[in-house]
Image (cartoon, rainbow, N blue to C red; front, side, top):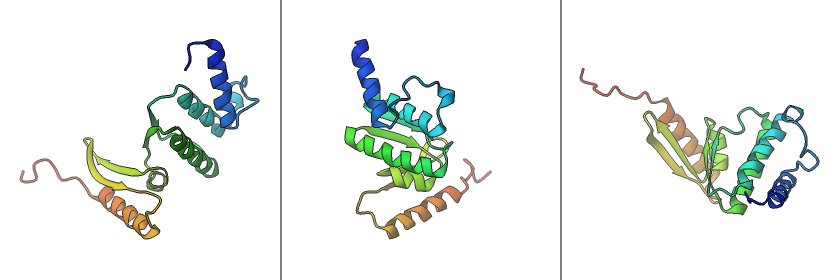
Length: 148
């Protein structure tokens, strides 16, 4: 974010407009819907021009339609600005919709599954990945010392 207050204000207005919030610059948070508050969060994150965005279940509290629209907008903004986003979710379909790389972790912070997706990933491949992820998630971790 620019140190100059005028530049900061211009950046703020530009990002709010880009996310469809023009006219709400002076609204109190309680006057905004959940989707609007999430759009403000996205605008704030992009306005400071970070190299990496960390998103911890950002759309989990939104209704399905709003979450779908914001996911698409978020992906578009990440790609347009050439940013890296680490997106944490417990929703497999959301991870596969947003990500180009999906990691599933087992405790303690061990990668149990990794998949890469791109525009040419077929629906059959996506279904197989989903089934593989479900299989990995359903496997109980063996005790550290199985011989005891």
